[in-house]
Length: 513
Ligand code: UN1
Image 1 (tube, rainbow, N blue to C red):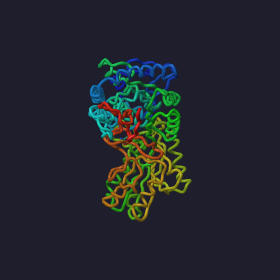
Image 2 (image 1 turned 90 degrees about the vertical axis):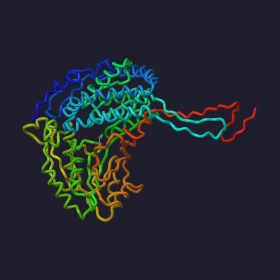
Image 3 (image 1 turned 60 degrees about the vertical axis):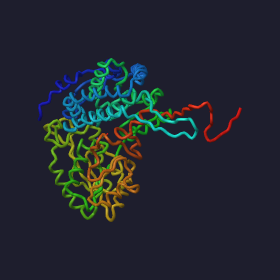
Image 4 (image 1 turned 180 degrees about the horizontal axis):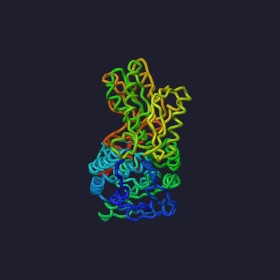
């Protein structure tokens, strides 16, 4: 096992084993009940973190509303400069932050570092964006009139994030929101409070050094009750929430009830279609990383393989062989491929999925199990499993946040596989493995994949930050990260200016006095 000194990591990140879980920057407080950060790696308690009471919440919101008054008047490129400094700090602290992510959440060190890299990347993207918050100009139908649109900051953005990407998803939101002139209040998962405190500390230092007010970056730890304070608050125009479909429906209703905006990034049921023209070697690498990487706890994890009958047995054998090579264990040890699930509830739902697929008539090809003994003391380590199933099984229609992969067979044309792929409630990520141009283009066409992400000869997970990230149907419809996802963090204003001495009306309407 690797030598791992959590105390050194905490020291490098300037955090303690007991922390205030509410913060508006340098100011830290929180008098609500404590939550305990427990590592799924070894079951150790890492830290205790206080949560937000409604008074703490009030204080946070009023501080952030005040900060907004100053921040919205700071020129966008100057806001970009702050984000640049934040990105540089992340570069410096990539190792300890990546380690903390790995230790508190349980993903491999490589993936923990990769997550911090995603934060750095989105900062770079946001810096460039800070000079490109463009609106359009239009031609007015009236003489001597000019029309254009501009994007203004929105206000307080509420960010609700999940345990599985405890730092990157916040950064996707906050880096964009900051250059857009917004202030942010972050409600992280109660399973990864320490990662959030570490990030908040890094941001707070940068804001403080630049003489900026408290409240541009805020943190409110706590459970769903704290989330509810945020989602029902009319002073928070946008809620960006990542997590389960169940959570997303609750958030959407609370935000919708007050006609606020929500950006939802919810569950996926991501499939790879494997056609007769697939490169089998690439397929196996993509599918195995997609299914067992992050122990199957990405919203982009590969859940289903839809394989043409003509190559089914070949792919099946290659997968079973590959699974036999997997090393499960401490994610901080780079020799291991698969780390633990987040907690015992996740282990339960993994076991339930395996039972259910058999109950519904499926066949287990690679058996799952909860591992015990040396190195597995936390009880969160499970064996990645593969089952043969039918597309319409209830369990196959659901997202189980665990390394369980379902093999489904199709026959005939690629359209058959696309139908199977689309015939689920979720619509996040999708992929096709093929060297056949017709199949690939068919998959990408209007009659093809109905997901927000559709890849050719790449697996379903591991998207880059430059594209818009999110999906359709029960995935919630939101788009985060690259492309023009920034627009949701701003309010659009259409301006028409008359530089004549006449007042002609639009649509040729005459109104003579
Ligand atoms: C998530 O699982 O919530 O595409 C985000 C990926 C990562 C992000 C996943 N870049 O797998």
